[in-house]
Length: 332
Image 1 (cartoon, rainbow, N blue to C red):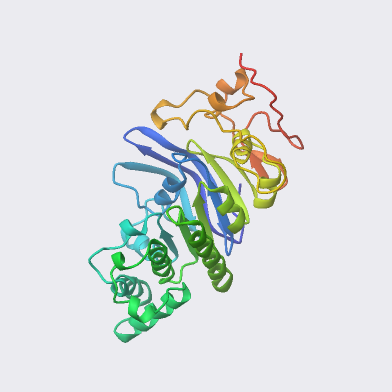
Image 2: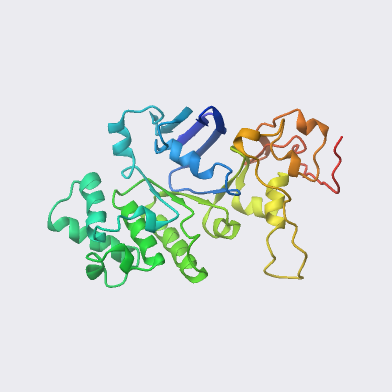
């Protein structure tokens, strides 16, 4: 698929191998300017690895292949000087656990100030003034005093706001948020999501939200990519995906959610677990867990193909204008 003119970042055929074991199997996705893209799936599906690979943040033993282009500039194999300008400048990433991402022995103002000096060229009083502005922007109370605080003096929700402020310090075109609300209670989670939505609306930056929480994705994102075992297996506008998922795995994820309205029903969990990268089944990786798998699923790795306008799925049972119905397992 040829990159679109409004694509900010384009990933094609991205692969990652650790010590000879393939973890990503050719990821294709793109993010347009100002777009909010959700990346969902169980733990171990490759969501975080995709963006760590794209930004050159994986350890040296990882072998990365394919292409990651930021408005035509190739990032895979790019010199460290190029990646240093891109990371935090054009693309910022905030991580799941702010306690491990923040330096416990440095004041928060200094940590944000380092990003401002590196990516914006600020110095002296200008750094402190801009850091305070960012703290105010992300809703940290008593911002001037918090600049002199250490991470352990703030709550988990406030530290996550500090991480967002650091991400915004370079005025990025794209913010990648990796499970930014997992460790937070429901009230703080809602506040962080509202904050990300408001900042994206005010600044025009694009957002990639990595999460296993479908409710978080539905609330925040316009388009969704579903990942399983190192592959994207469905992509669609968020409203269409949640109304009628095409891939059996996406159907299973939604069936496992309790309904907020209407008659209560028994939840339907997806049996089994995501296969280990070194012990992948033949053919479709989801086949051992799929209630509608047939013999052909063990022989064929399905490709991500267009199944509807704006919708793509990787399942041999999904055909144009059809939705798979799997009343019972029919393994040969």
